[in-house]
Length: 313
Image (cartoon, rainbow, N blue to C red):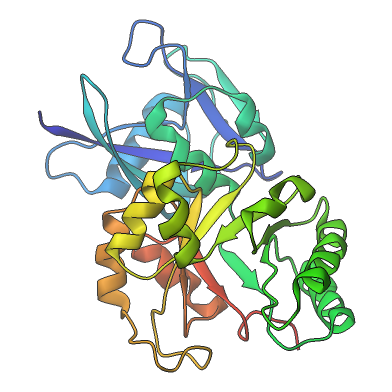
């Protein structure tokens, strides 16, 4: 069965809302909501296909777009490759030119809509930022919270609370403060034993590679309403992350890094190949900074993650 290549768009308005369209009842996956787009014709550049489809379906002209994520999915009766782009500027007023109902929703509200299975990773990618801040080692809790407050003021929306120098009780106390500080501003991803999950219902969890190997055969440890991530370094770990149903991963190290000088870097080309076989959002980590976010996007990554290059000085 030939894989159908589809160009799809996560379209933002000036208020940061995302445009959804509902599929006709008589079509494949009819009645479900989707991100607008359509089939890429043979030999047609994806960006051209996206612009054509959005003008035909919605009456808008794309002015600014960049790659977001690629998702391969096999339905019982159809195989698709969704080539998803983020559209941040367009002209014209979006309307259902083919009679399809439309809805403008906030990223948080995406969870209230029912999508085809192939769209689920797109929902997560649309809800995630381009930068993932990891807190540095060897800071006193007060200094760490002060830096975190500054990072939030600078626009950070996704934070991993990494504090390996602290004992468990100290980390748990710090986690309570960090989750409270970030409430309504950023998603906090904690690290630690899964036995702590029930104590931090508002937090997501970022698994180490060792935890991933231990728990992946058991599947996802909590419902999809909570964020789940994992640290990956190779194709085997990415496969385990997919098996576990994580929402996103970090892939590292891309470049040489002072945090792990002994680790052999993947390089950008190998990172591109690994991302191409993985259907969830990927943050590149190790020797990268905010200035590398666009390059990361061009090879299929969600964005970049880091400690030193992201921490406010």
